[in-house]
Amino acid sequence: MAQTQLELNALRSLSTIFTPSHFRPIVSTGDISQSRIKIRRHFPSVESTPLYKALKMVYGALEKNYRNEYVFKNAILQELLKNYSLAETRLLSEIRTGASVADFIFLNGETRIFEIKTDLDGLEKLDKQIEDYRRIAEKVFIVSGNKSLERIVSRYHGTKIGILTCGPKNCITRVKEAEFDSNHFCHERLFKLMRRPEYLSLLSKKIGYQATSPNTKLFRESLEAAKTIEIKEFQKLVRETLKGRVLKCPEKLLATSTPMPLKQLCHALDLSSLEYDTLFLALKSSI
Image 1 (cartoon, rainbow, N blue to C red):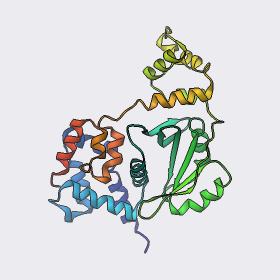
Image 2 (image 1 turned 180 degrees about the vertical axis):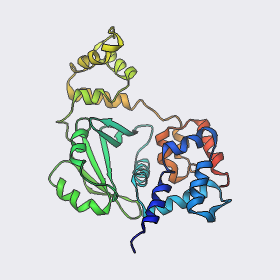
Image 3 (image 1 turned 45 degrees about the vertical axis):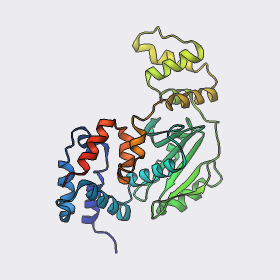
């Protein structure tokens, strides 16, 4: 039976719980009032239930009936954490390149980008997104739901783009392997991934560049200096620079005390030890 519009509206509303803006008050002050209001509105029977149990119930409803981008992101994160050590790899979320925002950039010995297309998404922007991602990454993967999988496979058959699918039980399955491709890198796109201290440090170490320009000209002149470095070498240097953005508390992210439905949120917010402690206390509070 098709879901009613009311049910869809409820699921959309509940899905906003798993967003950084919703969780920041919880991890900073322990304030769960907004979660309490939203969950009780749609699940009145959970009154007096600990927040962590209520969140598990909400997440289960999303997994079953409204597999949005967050559910996919959480599944991808679980898969990567199973197979790679955070000591050797880095995963960045929501990174802009050109007109596109990459869902995940995975950095270890190479740069991989994962673009999510759930069954709630259209494919209108996908070609342009792929074009943008190839400017900075050797491998690009599309993570598809079931609805669009056949169209995506047909569109990217014979290309170097990889395709994964997030199945009904949120298991990530490889449909088509991505092939290594370093022929599309762009100095400016790579340069813009870095923060000012990062690119100044990279240029100083690599070519002895010392910034003397005023702030209004510093970015442009530093970019011109970066363009003197061979593009494939520059891409590797940028990757190593970005890998320097270490998580504050990787051990708490991996701990069983951090509920599975919240792993991606905790990763994206990069919580401090104090914020994790505040979160764990809040999760025990009754809604």
